[in-house]
Image (cartoon, rainbow, N blue to C red; front, side, top):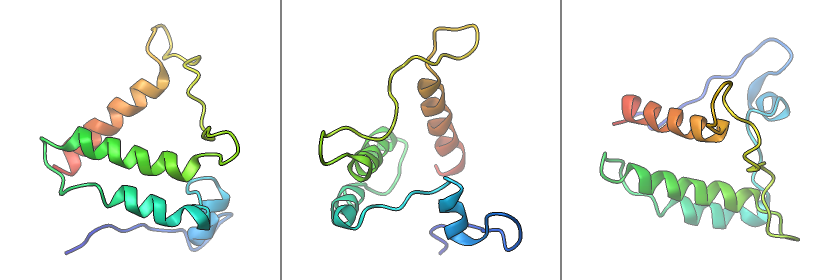
Length: 109
């Protein structure tokens, strides 16, 4: 069974997986955090409609673990809530989260 795959460009400015890292599409998990990230990912269960939200929360735990700054405990993302969808009071991160959840429901459930 296919469990996942990625396709990388063979020609152009950014080629291969390292090209995608350099382009900012992927990030490298710092070596000291690899075990913590895998431990957080292993908390997930086989995806069902009933556990979708819980699994997404566990994946965010893994992401935050990978991004967390050891010195101050912060992550490298902006959660300032200052950017809104044009003409609304909806934060763009809320819109992105809802779009991701809908994509998972449509394509993975």
